[in-house]
Image 1 (cartoon, rainbow over the protein chains, first blue to last red):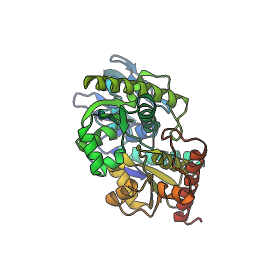
Image 2: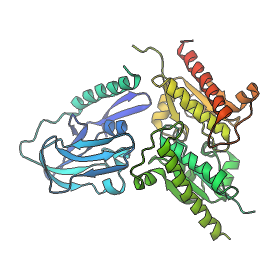
Image 3: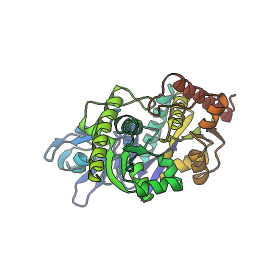
Image 4: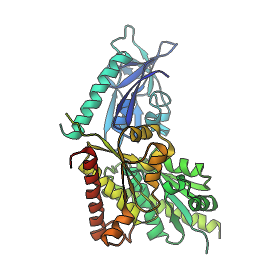
Length: 149
Length: 134
Length: 134
């Protein structure tokens, strides 16, 4: 799979080139039936740590862009997951309940969060290249925070 | 004298889960079930130490994984270890949602609590395995 | 601008004895002191073949911290990346200082914790020497 990668310390942050993104570190994949599959980016899962709990708004929930799609909890943080698009939740990944660590081990694959049927005219998503640039800045800012700068 | 059950924790140095796995192992081997449970260095095993390999293949092994990377179970499996039980620190964390073990170097209060809970579970397993072979 | 090179540290956490505990805690204490200048690499993960860890150790100077003369960390770094630039053998160090190894492998207290801090200080000095600041 073609990816952009960025190294910092011993970590390599991956951004898949075949996906779209939101500024809130959520990836989006267009499905053949017009729905969108969404999940957390590699950067988001690494920053937060091992996911212990995760939950998502159930199927049928109407979502605004930027609305609360779900949340996840690590020992460090409780983090909201914001919807990258307006639409209706069609399906939630059952693994969120039984194996939320999939969000860490395979954020772009089996760690997906929800499938959303977007409202017509949905746009405003970032290309992989655009998100990659944003992500690099975020990584650098995180490192500065750690250094106390 | 019966062969002790071998407990192999992951000991990951980057996360509190590794410290908890390690701490719980010592609680069982040195305090709760001395003589019935023992441990050995996971790294020594993976580096191919013959004595370590012989011990894991000829003993009943309990593995403790700190995080989903599962270094202990993966490495013991690869070394043809006889795994009879697996414990995951993350599973225990899920059962005890209020606990947030953050410190890695020296366990904090929540880390100590989780270590004790884990150690009790493992000790019970050691008892079960020991009875089976009686 | 930070021009000091990052230094990797790979430590054993040897479960067999308290020397592994000193090794682990000393490494953690040094990491806390030099947080933005060192990267601690988890030995079990390193041995599993996690390529990001190997990649880092190939590109950056790396120090091995071993609890005893079996030198698992040092051998692992050599095997999977390149020779470490420096190393610490806690067992040899304690003998040199004329102090006893810890009896309790789970909790370091009193003189054992002081010994761990002393090893941490030595490790910090080694890192700074590699970085050219001492």
